[in-house]
Length: 456
View 1 (cartoon, helix red, strand yellow):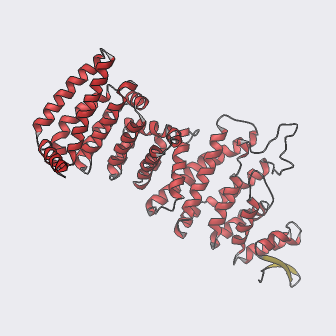
View 2: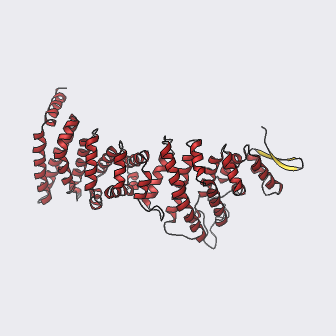
View 3: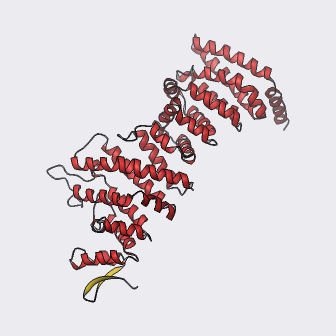
């Protein structure tokens, strides 16, 4: 009890003293000079310990109050940055951790300090410095850096925007995203979760599209960083997070028009027509699926979001890609999927496995109790295309069940669609079991084939 009380008193006294920060800064600068010379390994080790000790004392004083942070910042920040310049080997990696922890405490709960620190920090973090620092930081150092980034952008639209407006900020984001797979393989997953929190903040602040553009081109090939970003967006949307209406609309516009219409669909058709392995086809295949999954998640937010997505003329585009996939990709079954003379195998990237499944799934979500979508599907010739999916396809497991559910939604309270499907039944273009599973049965009314709902 007494020890804790003494500690609080000493911390308060030191924290209020500008002399302490001046003296501490001078000692740290002297230690840095010794560290740079690297005369002997033992001296370096002792130097590192002293530096970490002094930085730890300084960071422990920050909770004494915002006025302490404002007094200490102009003295400590240049010293901390100067130590980051020394981060060039594993011997001094622990200093990087102490530096970033000090910056976190120096700016905690102080918006004015955060604003100043964020600009000065990003000004220092050139591509060269980012590469060097990330290479030599320990796992704990990476954690401290990620916490600093979240602390700065989490509460501020302006700082989130500045991250993506500055060249250094974009380079920092790219470097972090490129390491996500490595963070995800770590035993405790903490750094992966912190990167997810950073991307979550960018989504909430409405700058996700800018983050995507910072990681590569908007209209050409997909980079691995862009794939990671869209996968993190998918994780956010599918976890039942509340998305602001304007953010959801902007994301829908971006996903539907920029990514699906302008990028995914043309490349899908190009790959499927060539019917051969193409560099990065596996990345593109995964990217297409994730984009479709994001669109589906947005459509499930509300009826208003469905209307927004439909308003981008997505239904005819989805049907057209589904039709082209049917024309260009042979349906696979266990028998047909066995290796043949031409080397045909199940699941080639250019076959876009599961893409048709995702398309049918989205159309099912959009068509539910939506007369506009029901009519659009019929008018663009989509009913036969959906019905043709009621077959087993090992490239798209369970697509038959998805298609039957979609047909059920397309027929509900829509006589025109029911009459069209009934005409297919009359021409024996449709098997009766598909209708039964969709909840309908064919019957003769006034000499014509018609559909009626089954009675249980």
